[in-house]
Image (cartoon, rainbow, N blue to C red; front, side, top):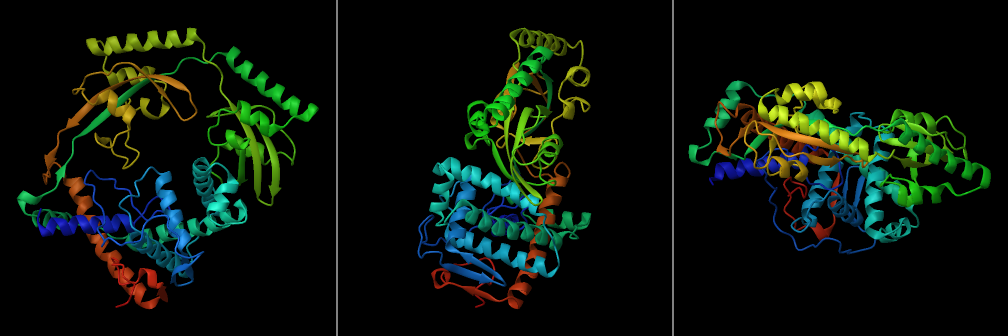
Length: 478
């Protein structure tokens, strides 16, 4: 590979590390392209999870302080997202955290705001992972040398807010950056022909979904069970928390007695859930109610101004064997008609699929990463990949059972509507992807220029432990 392409890949990684769309505390960007690269920085000798001094200050950027524990938290966040930390050094994470703080510092200067509710939702996800790894809130607080979980929550709030501010500031810096067709052409043809990137195999997929019918009897049985729990809590003083541990089907809260803290009117919860949370007084228990996730009862534990701490029990109606068999027969009949040519897959999906998001488009799936119809075979969800990997265009998969995040089962068939073999970049066929690479290179230049200017004008102090790191920016002001 030539120096030119190496420089491009390196620069691409830098931009990915700087223009984070979903803010996290990891300092590592997620690649949305089939061309996956990593920022290469001189390997340092500092290893993950070793503490060098209690709550030591690692750096100061503007008004923000970076502690050694912030780097530890970044490693935990990476692990919570399934990322490997084996080759990620403390120098690399320090560099990313300083970038975040620089952007956050400038965001405040530019009066960029972030809703607290959005930050609280992120914190809940992080704490749930930490608790699952360490066993309890007390152990999590102890690991981070905090007196209690509330103190850690406060620290996480500040950290996550600065990261979100950084993300918004980054977006603002590059929001007006565009590339012209001539710039795209110049970019592509400046790469030697034998060194142009290779794009991996991709496919387009459509699905047809049949949900087993949930009978009124099954729904009534769930409502009766929830009403019985409610009565036991209100009339007999039974513990709502215990009911949640024993019976709730919500994997995110059942082990905590159904507890969710800091719910606000702007929180990303179902409308019906929030309506109940803000219509009850402390100690009251709701009637059974339905959301897209199932049936609930909700208990208001604490009202704190505009925030509410609640517990809930989530249950699903049982699907009868008769309903399952009927759904199986229906999807088998549809598969036969599509395979024989009696109807097309798209027509069958539009008429019969139970998936509201895809049926109007003939069952066509949209890649949630880039909102395109193409899926990289090496990055697909394993459930999807296993079903379509060996299919040819137009072939229909075997019938399989899929479960959503609530545990509800559906019967599905898939088809490959288009296949794209692995190939070297072609200007005409891959124009949109080449355009994105060209845009990324231009954004990198804008980002680097902005960052270097702000580093010069911002107070920065870096602890001696990190003086030997080789950062991508001139943080040491040498």
